[in-house]
Image 1 (cartoon, one colour):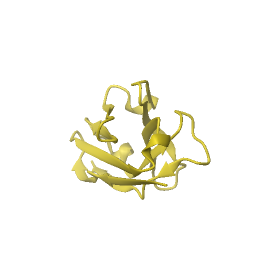
Image 2: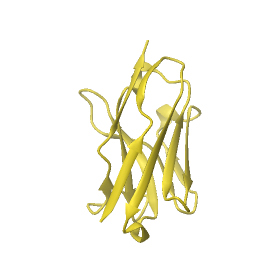
Image 3: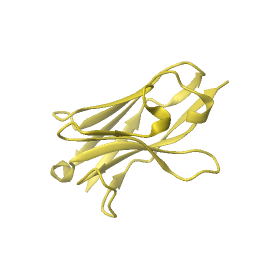
Image 4: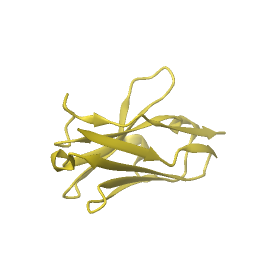
Length: 119
């Protein structure tokens, strides 16, 4: 069992910045990859960014150059620095932890944190 605790969401104007954090606890030995997905109103959940324990990253094209994912393996925590936020970035951001960079049914998910970007 893995528990994910997210923080950092909020309301910000376009062009602003937010930093999301996700701390994992429990059976953390099973975690080799963590990342962020978001769900916008009326849209499917989509990958924002992911990172492996070794540092390999994957970003959605829409956030490249604006968002940066990083991790502290010692703290089992992943961060998402979001700069130059746009209204299209609005949504619920979910932290994900799993055995690989590829999504699996056994993956763990946080409860989500709301990010709202106003124009």
